[in-house]
Length: 58
Image 1 (cartoon, helix red, strand yellow):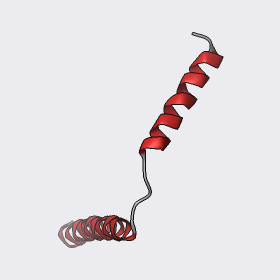
Image 2 (cartoon, rainbow, N blue to C red; image 1 turned 45 degrees about the horizontal axis):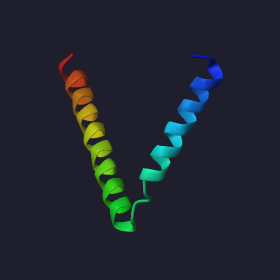
Image 3 (cartoon, rainbow, N blue to C red; image 1 turned 120 degrees about the vertical axis):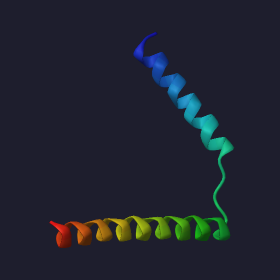
Image 4 (cartoon, rainbow, N blue to C red; image 1 turned 180 degrees about the horizontal axis):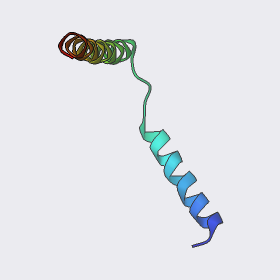
C-alpha cells in the first residue's frame, strides 16, 4: 500500500467516525465534568495522604 492510499483510508475512517459521533448535551457535559473533577480530587487526596505518611514515618 502506498502512502497516499493509506492516507485516503485513514481520512475515510475519520469521516465515518465524525458522522457517527454527536455533541454532548449540557447535562451530559456537566456529568462528565463533575465525575472528572471528583476523580482528580480523589487522586490528589490520595497523593497528599501518601506524602503525609512518608513525611511523618520516615
